[in-house]
Length: 305
Picture 1 (tube, rainbow, N blue to C red):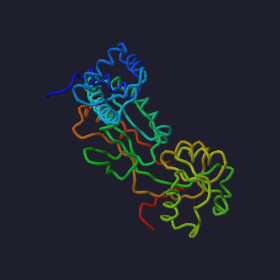
Picture 2 (picture 1 turned 90 degrees about the vertical axis):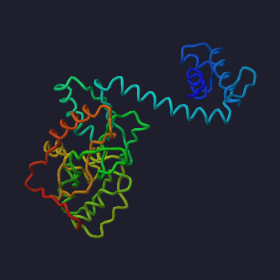
Picture 3 (picture 1 turned 135 degrees about the vertical axis):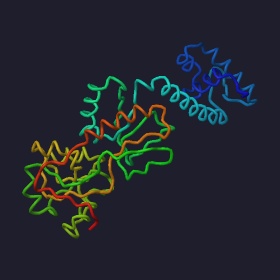
Picture 4 (picture 1 turned 90 degrees about the horizontal axis):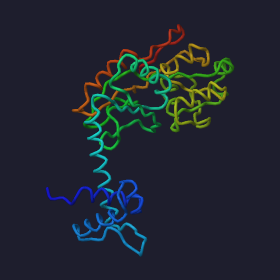
């Protein structure tokens, strides 16, 4: 393959990204003069101006900006490939939604670490409006995502447990919620208010109840915390709220839990070089999924109303 020098490409990408020869030199541990020479080598190679120079000041050109963006993606891909190959037997990089992480996953991974010195799980907990992962662009080996089991071509997935929704509130609000939910402040754990909509539709309760008002949050965790503090009645994930329910921090004003059709899945790339580590984690997670609370008042609705 006929390519310009890779070290020149690296110097140019850093200079374009930082918009500074001196900052690029510090990053690469070379001199600003060396950065300048590398860039001139590339300008001669491509026969175009990559930086516009005005005395000591430089500014990346439009052509340079285009090249720098493509080089950045290329270097990131190379870095991910090298990291995965170098540490495939030692590390597993996991992406997971924030509520799941706080309510279940941290404890499970802590026990995993006690029983399995390797691989070491490096977890990144993030808020996702729609749970998704792009293994070609994001630095993860696997992810736990809430969805219907279809996460795009080139991925494999296994269901860990299904999502069951149920209203939750503080003990102080329990009587009011049971007697007159329409008069209570509703808490929505997602901006689209989908959780209350799903629960009302499947249970058939409170026909005509408006869900347009109330307090709106980004996550089930935030909704639970607001309910726990007495700010209204929220909808929680039954399995992820079990500990708070058993401890009495949260109460169930209504006994019906409804299945949404979604679930939490472990997802990973097809033909993963570290599939053995992914399967080790999968086996552990499936053996430690949360259990339904043993409350005799709870019954389950899995069909559409």
